[in-house]
Length: 278
Ligand SMILES: NC(=O)c1ccc[n+]([C@@H]2O[C@H](COP(=O)([O-])OP(=O)(O)OC[C@H]3O[C@@H](n4cnc5c(N)ncnc54)[C@H](OP(=O)(O)O)[C@@H]3O)[C@@H](O)[C@H]2O)c1
Image (tube, rainbow, N blue to C red; front, side):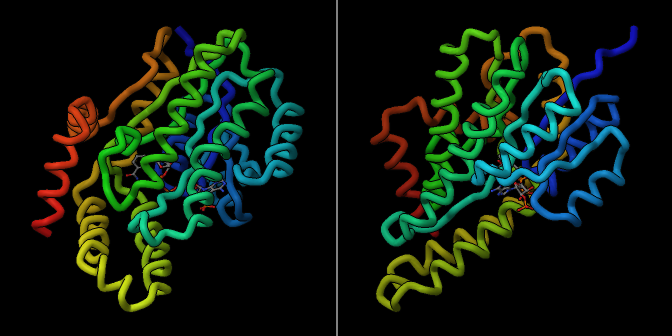
């Protein structure tokens, strides 16, 4: 039996999970509108498969979302799936992180995703929104608290959207453990810039933790899962008649969920113990 061809929008398709997912969905025959921010990414993506149309979307810029909206609805009568994938990871010690950086984190991962969803919802009736959240949404990871909080906030807002909306729009949160993508290098580079601006006393306070964060990000990236695993899970969700509200990807994500169910003082005790040994 011939598979149904769907119209799918995915944000943040220039690299990592977004690029791989756009490619795999297009290969399955779906019509994919892939969000990018640079001409070079547009050209490269469109070369991958004729089913991909790259669209400029900066999720923090309402006028770019508006332009993308008109561009897409002129080309498609309906939208079946919106994948909120665009994301950044702001890392560092909460004590010294500039509020501007924390706002930037929420602007992309939380408000950006919601802004795109609100714009496209009138065309998503009976459709599906898939959010690329993270196991960080379980909130137990120090020194990437802005990232954890942004994903948790996204999950809470979109879960309400699922309950409240009257257009039968399903909402699914995908929570992967570490995946091999450029996000962690970008995050460390940005955290390093912020760290370098601190005075010596502040630097000394968190020097050990910063160097652990740096090493851990690189180590995580080497041992992380492949992007294809996320893309395959997304395809499974799209093909499922009744997808669940939330999917963990990987044993570490499941472990993070279980740990997050324990009382805070127990979780904090063990995390502090681990940090004291770095
Ligand atoms: N890698 C992991 O371990 C992991 C685990 C769990 C969840 N995730 C989530 O997976 C998603 C994809 O990340 P990734 O790991 O594949 O990293 P990535 O390769 O760095 O991809 C991030 C994507 O987001 C885009 N982006 C950033 N800011 C944007 C903005 N303001 N507007 C539109 N697009 C923007 C980037 O575009 P530019 O190239 O233009 O900057 C890029 O295409 C993120 O939401 C991330 O939180 C990742």
